[in-house]
Image (cartoon, rainbow, N blue to C red; front, side):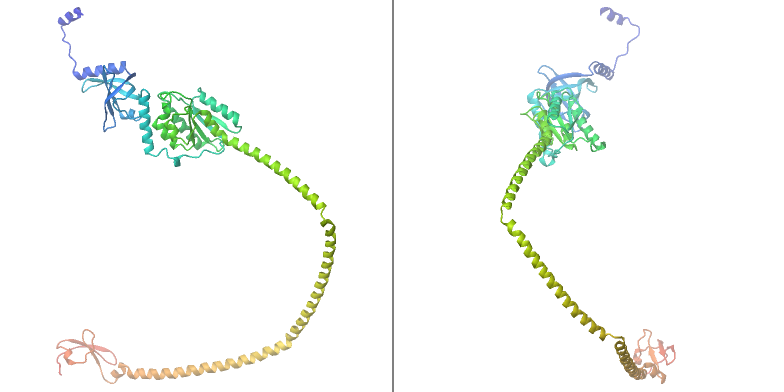
Length: 462
């Protein structure tokens, strides 16, 4: 140490000092390289949600504090709204805010720690989705009555899938099971479950009718609140609500609820209960068929016994003695009616024949020809009379027209003009009847019997 210090005193080349910005940049590079991913637990203080969407706060453990920043691209994936006083677990990388030379942690994920914090975060998400009416009953889709294909979104290694498989294998013979494997615990579990539901819906869009998934069971076995937190994530809840496939939430906790339970179309307290919900329709149908078969056999036996009793009563009834005699009486009555009908038909035929002969004599060709000739003569006479009447009417109208034309001609102004008179009009086309209506040098139009001309007034006299 001393030798290096003394050496620097005798160093002939002076070393260039670093600027503050350069130093902060080197420190930032070293911190980000050495602390690229760290986990920290602490209490949030001085939380600020900026207008830009970024979050800024300080992590405090009672002895030390560390500034933290969570940018909007990361806080959109965080499951709840942080607040002062909550204990959290943060994952991120250390960096330096160069303008102030302060080091901070850039938060990439943030989770509440402890039952109290988880409960607060749960209530926040529940209240937000309830305000958006995502839990309303009218949004929930009915489950298919007789599903043929069931999709199970869970861990392939967990007990939940094996419980579902055992129940369905034992209670149904027609339901096929499709496992959609995913994590059900951990930081990325919520997103993996959400993606599995999306993949199932996309598969249904391109699959044949026989291959489509009729219902989805989404769940896992029991666990602590932290273990079950993936089923409380907001993005997963929105995906469940938007799914076109009906979804049963089957998280293994009979007392507590998750957000997935509220938003799903049906809640089952355990995975086995979800499998029973799917299988109950087939059990109901089988029990219904068995019961109706027994009822049918009982009804058949009853009908057979009843028919036997009826047959015995009929065999002992006096009707079997009286009925043959009744048949004979009916036969005699039928023969008598047949004879009456033939006689009446023959009488009716004779009457109709006589009427036909009478009508035929009236319609003989000689009589018809005489009738036609007589009608032709009457028609010719009527024609002559009508033509004479029309001619007389036309002559009368013609004579009247000539008289009216002579009267009109006598009254026509043109006839007056032919006797040497004339009509004078001023420039406006008005007939001049008084010399006072004409001024000197005024132009007037004069109409004669044949033609008209224009003149100029030189002098007027009263």
